Image 1 (spheres, rainbow, N blue to C red):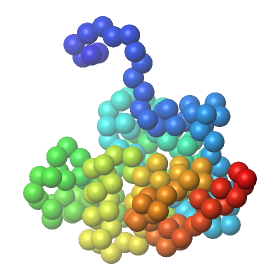
Image 2 (image 1 turned 180 degrees about the horizontal axis):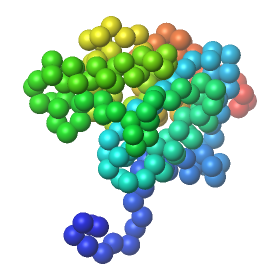
Image 3 (image 1 turned 60 degrees about the vertical axis):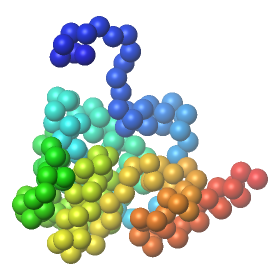
Image 4 (image 1 turned 180 degrees about the vertical axis):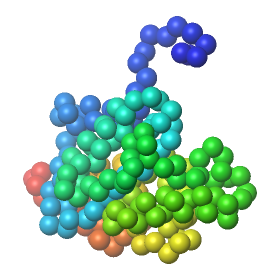
Length: 187
């Protein structure tokens, strides 16, 4: 709409911005208590479209605010470089589906090394292509991190992680009984 100067009367916001707004205004009630003793480390992939192409770091800063709120600030390890300077994962722009897996993985080795340097147990990947690529390069290069969606970690932080949302977590998170703890706290 901006490109073709089409008038509109609504505000465009990423779900990441909405999560941050809802946490700040108390609509989304989350905390990092579940990770206080576990100290599970997280890093975050800044997808190209929201990190570099938008022209501002607002969305990726909101992403970090949300992540730090739900896992504990001390448990977030940023990649270097990050935000609008972060490296591409190698899976975007059709590369993930383009049919050249060895070339895509070779390009993704830069991202793999960047993730490994953080020592993080989990990578938050807000973009579906990044998620699939980062998972693939982990398996291909023998990494031990897991790739998760932010929503899954938000569910942990709200104490409502369902059984169906645990399937791709490592045993350290899949076995957390946050649902039961939340139910007992609400009684």
